[in-house]
Image (cartoon, rainbow, N blue to C red; front, side, top):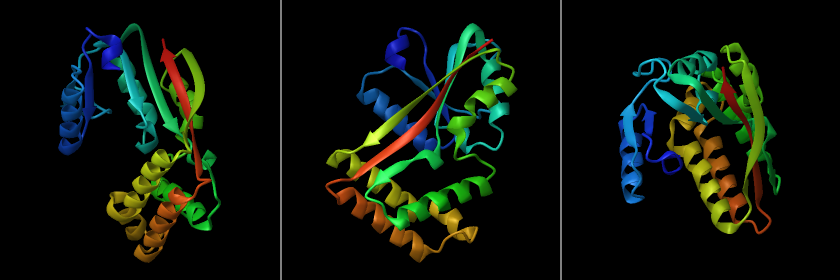
Amino acid sequence: LARRVAPGRTVGIDRPDDVLAQAAGYAAEQHVDVTFETGDVYALAYDDASFDVVHAHQVLQHLSDPVAALIEMRRVTREGGVVAARDSDYSCFSWAPLDPRLERWQDIYRQVARRNGAEPDAGRFLKKWALDAGFTDVRCTSSTWTYADPASCAWWGDLWADRCELTTFGEQAVEYRIATRAELSDIAAAWRQWAAQPDAFFAVLHGEVLARG
């Protein structure tokens, strides 16, 4: 994004300091000029009409009030600018080979997200949320990520195996009594086994919105 708008200014925000540090290090490696700042999407520390484009990627699905976030994003967007968002729709994910443990993973993830007041199937609701936020020109599209070659399957499988065992997702699944540690370890093993299969395939559906006005 920064390369596309250069020499315009690009600002990236997040809450955890370690994520911001990782992002800044990557930008430096790629020789891309981006400013990274601690921020809250519900209360952006910028004046009204500060940006031409405000983009949230895989963010709204994690929020308890995505409409409020879009209203705040709209506030800092200049007249004629665009607010853009892209989010997954977990119930539309598809994969092969089939494994009941991965079906259970999908169910656990959606339960945890909803227990947190979030919407794991956010992609299908972006249009409604943008309209509820007051936008008058809302354009929607969809796209997919596909993991089918050995390298991408290994990355995707390891990512979710680690999330089951090493991240807040797994901790909350246990805390909320949605799953046990033993079950999450079994699901992590299922992810790694899936990734090693020669016919491994996984498709992730996204909803997308460009909102103006």
